[in-house]
Every structure is written in structure tokens, then in C-alpha cells.
Image 1 (cartoon, rainbow, N blue to C red):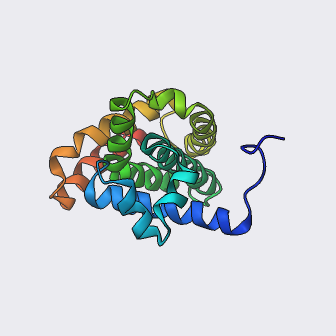
Image 2: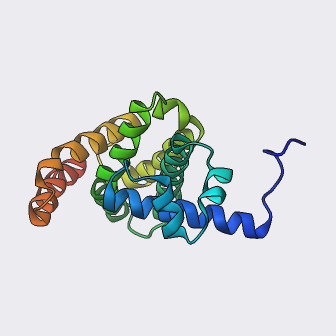
Length: 188
């Protein structure tokens, strides 16, 4: 068993989780250009600990990106079990679009560093597609347009995320745009 395959000690796992949480907060507040040293300070660990877990800034950015995709998959799984699957799909759509700006910034930073975000996220992306598929199927059984595919839904999520970017300072405007798009999922 290699060092990478061994499970982390409890304290190391806590430090890694704190670093990921801190990185997400620091990158959201200061952008993906914020230094790893700032992330380490925010996590309450030394910079050496940060670089032990994430040898490069790109590896930290990639881990934050993958953690986001995992959370999206978890959220889709949870909402797929909701009593009102149409409302659940609407909730997932709106929440995902609202969080997209920082996810897009992470993907752009990875691409700028020479890391293909799609390749880096293939396993998490596959899981997310499956969870989104389950959520969509349940919503379709309750009235969402039956011709929609998971790929269609993902394209709509991406498009809506880009569409609300100019409305960053206008929450009501973002909500209106998201509402119009989500209404189209059910035909009104």
C-alpha cells in the first residue's frame, strides 16, 4: 500500500478538511489568486501542513473543485428523495446557478494552470450526472418536460449560470432570470 492509498490519521483528515473549507472561503472572498499561505492561516494550520496535503496550488484548487462537485451530487441525491420532485428540481437548479460563479472561477483557474477541469473531475462528474439523472427522472414523473435529458439540464445550468453573471449585484434580477428558465422546465 502506497502512502497515497493509506487512510489519513484523524488529525491529518481534520487538517485537510479545514484546509478545503478555508480555501473555499478564501477563494470566494479574494479570488483564486489568493496565496496558499492565506488559506493555511484561515485554516489555522502552518503552510507546511497545507503543502503536505496539497503540494501545489493547482492541487488545492482541484481538490476544492472536486469537493464542490461532490456536494452537488450529494444535494441532488438528497433532493431526488423529496416529496415534491418538481420543487426539488427547481431548488437544485436555483442553488446551483447561485453558486456557479465561484465554481466557474475555480475551473478557469485550473484551466489557466494547464489542468483540464473536466478530466480532473471525471469521477465526480459521472457521479453528479447519475444523481442529476435520478432527480430529473422523478421530476419528469411529476410534470417536468419528458423530452429533457441530463445533458439538456446540464446545458441549461451552464447557460443560466452565465446568464446571471451580469446581474451579480442584483439578487432580484438573478432570481427573475432563474425563475423564467426553471418555469420552462415544466412548460410554465
